[in-house]
Length: 161
Length: 121
Image 1 (tube, chains in turn brown, orange):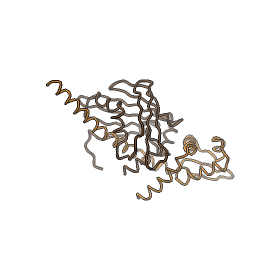
Image 2 (cartoon, rainbow over the protein chains, first blue to last red):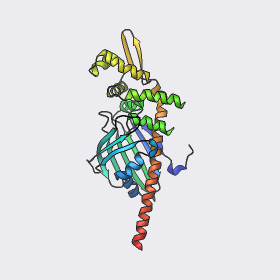
Image 3 (cartoon, rainbow over the protein chains, first blue to last red):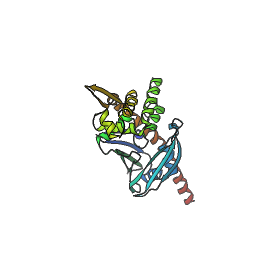
Image 4 (tube, each protein chain N blue to C red):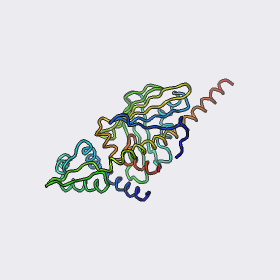
């Protein structure tokens, strides 16, 4: 796939043995990017792009520090719907979101998103911090990537190729 | 190639559809273990655990080696070669999401602009 230019390229860094960092620059001020992350009807539009072939069954987001979220999705290849849930450890308008991924009873990552406005642009940095190297290694071994679950992750990867 | 991936994907999918098997992978991520260790850990019969390990083995997620009377399980060799591929698929997922987010953000920006214009009128 051709690169569309530096501005809109997504980079991933295996930052440490238990941390993955994704960065991307957006051509909009931080309050607009934050809105797209925090309104369920907007969030689901991009979190589950149509190309993933996944249906959103329900999405509840109580966006505040200590609030919880619950995302239920379905896919034709899976008989059971998949549920993803956790709670927001920190919600700071226009700059920071931190949540847990509790569907994995142990070894779930904590996801931290920071929005940094740079002029008219906003730099989004997303970190998936696993509790240990073993937890990230296990996620890699199982084909899982955070926020998506083991089964769907591989499906999505397959659909993307 | 696609066919190969599909077959392997089906095997992985089946292997990962079970919570015990996901637990076994998690456990092996911490250290290698014998089938007996795993059976104890997951409160299961030896035969039951053997079946689970065999499914994981067929999917290439686990390898086993018999030394004396003990069969030791470890995460599959496939893992090493696939780490780079995993990172790439992780990146592709985020790239797809962020491209979609770009569109949402663009719409919001346009809305805000229109709204601002209306207020001025």
